[in-house]
Image (cartoon, rainbow, N blue to C red):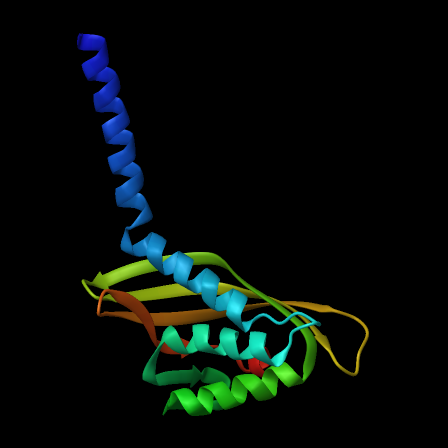
Length: 164
């Protein structure tokens, strides 16, 4: 009898630990950023329907308007969904393929419904006019806000080289 209680207790604690970790704010933010990176990425065979679905995934993860900061240009403006989507469509048309991942993700939760995320952006992109695929690493930062139980990007800071 005591063995069964111990086994059931261990299983319950393990499941509770998994549940708490999986639904913790930091784990949810990491999953949201992974989905964002996949949505920004582009395969060579991407059709217009896939592109619109990807842009929809991006739009769901932004607060409207979203603050965009590019330090090298002293650019710091609030941009609407529509403007951000137009730029992404333009940007994606310049390249045959885009493979984006976020590495070295460091999440700080300074307030209850606010997160500051430091990232390294790993970008593989093949320009339409060039054969070679370029691998690039850039630092970046997201500030997220929790609204309606969902983490959304309130501000993004990116280097100029990433968006050119």
